[in-house]
Amino acid sequence: GAVVSQHPSWVICKSGTSVKIECRSLDFQATTMFWYRQFPKQSLMLMATSNEGSKATYEQGVEKDKFLINHASLTLSTLTVTSAHPEDSSFYICSARDFQVALDTQYFGPGTRLTVL
Amino acid sequence: AQSVTQLDSQVPVFEEAPVELRCNYSSSVSVYLFWYVQYPNQGLQLLLKYLSGSTLVKGINGFEAEFNKSQTSFHLRKPSVHISDTAEYFCAVSDATSYGKLTFGQGTILTVHP
Image (tube, rainbow over all chains, first blue to last red; front, side, top):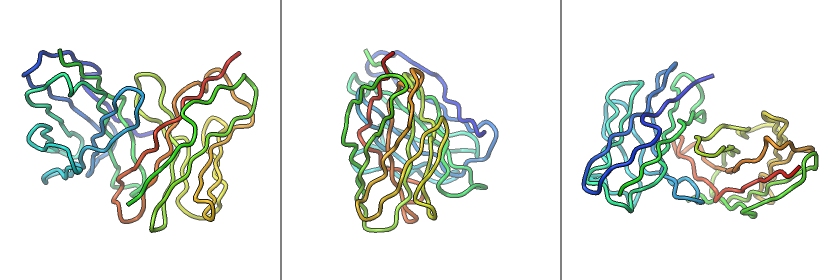
């Protein structure tokens, strides 16, 4: 089946630094990728929709200048958390949609746990 | 706007017992419905989905769900659970106009006891 990877799987950083998280579709091309964040014991909240070659679409309440998303190729999207603060600590999960399969088919990455000290 | 409500935050059950995880949704248009499972510190794995057609959907690991339009429900069932089914389960909804965006429920932690 289709595989989506994320790197790193976990990261610890100091407050004020920036962190980049990569999301890759390993065996299919993904025109669309989604970024979610999940706080402990809570559900996934969609942050943004990333389309290859165009600007990301952010959900209401998500700061686009803080969470920079780049989708430069059909197999890679990156999320950069700029000037991270402890409240940004969370589990970040990406998903990718295979454009050759039905629009409803999404494959999720294993997630990246970010801890900001 | 869509919303999903998972009625139980935690469901404890003994091994080999049946289980039902409840999910209700609201939407103004026809929906697509999904159940995902999440093991600790992992991403989500699709269990099953309803797009159209038969209201009884069978998924992986022996799970099934029934779409009930009149009750706006999509409950997940398994006739006999295993210890390995211990995980968190999420119900999610999208539709043809949301371009793949999923709205998730709050999650239900299923704990299977020996």
